[in-house]
Amino acid sequence: MDRFPLQDNFTGLWLDGRVKIASWFKVPVAAALNRRKTAQEVCDSLGPAAEPLPSIIQPELALDLKAPTLRRPVLLVHGLAQQADTWVNMKNYLCSNPENPYGGVYRPGQDVEFYTEQLSRPFPGKVFILNLTDNLASPAENGKEVSEAISKIRGATGSGQVDVITHSMGAYQARQALQDGEDAMANLIMISPPNQGAYGADLLLKLDKLGLGRYPENGALESLRADGDYVRALNATWEQDRQRLQSATIISGVGLPTPDKTWKLASNGDGMVAAERAQLGDTPMFVAADNGLPAGHPDFRDFQMFRYNHLQIVSEAEVYQKVGQILGRKPADSSPAENYGEQLVLDESIFKQPATVEWPTRQDSLF
Image (spheres, rainbow, N blue to C red):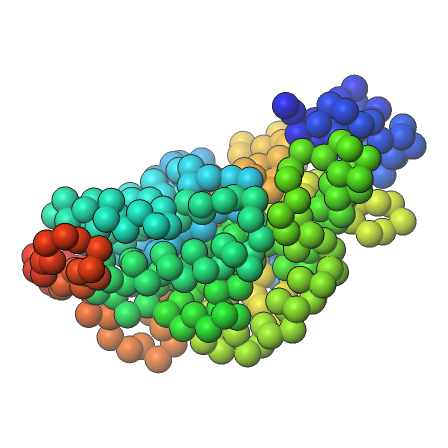
């Protein structure tokens, strides 16, 4: 079933093909699409923590983009009602560098299968993807699975810490893990995070009351409510939680009318999360927007607002580039690289026949 298609030159906005918003809503929708703000204009309105995400103008540069060598394992965490394949293109980018081998998908509770897969690889993986057991569960539950994945990845690689990249509500799962005491997360990159909630969740909850909902209510939508109780409680400890990180970064797209608590019923955002609701205090934020090139320019692109929409943004070269710059850089203290990949540290209780496995080392080439 289609989600939020724009039809008939914005004469109406359809929600799952069931409910049509009144025709008067076409005015703010059309106005928002026709008046394209530059990334700098958007950042000026968001405050000093926001800056434009640098555009890759020439297509050849995007096509030839290669990832830097990652300093430690990376865990990718998907969002609400999604799966591990959210990260197909991001995984391919990170693994374009042979020093960043793919480690596979971690499914909570399937430790034997996960460790068996690691044993089959000639070298420890560096890029892992979490597939949540229930992608409609509340962050309070899924945060435990993020910590579980970090623990198993550390055991499989010998790394002291893991970097985490999230999409959408995946930011809640990772931040919940931090709030619960996770201390092995190094850098956290949140792509399109609803850090102040998403008003679309409020609308879906209202549709539920009318018998038009599509998700079983198990806490996920309630936690996404704009300025809701869960969001306030999660944000209340952010300053303390972030102290356990080396860095935290937000990447979010703008250019589409996004449901929000305003008199227009919409704000500038990625179609699901308004730009202001992606912010989190003074956490650095990079804003992806139309590059502003005029029609007739050799590298002109139109409809860029759809490239940076809520789901597509994780597959854009500018986002890859920024992720690589963050995770491939050295910490500010220029400390040496972690002793990574020498031994697979197994939880031997998961095997009938306990075994200690020595990994081949190649420290001359890993960093």
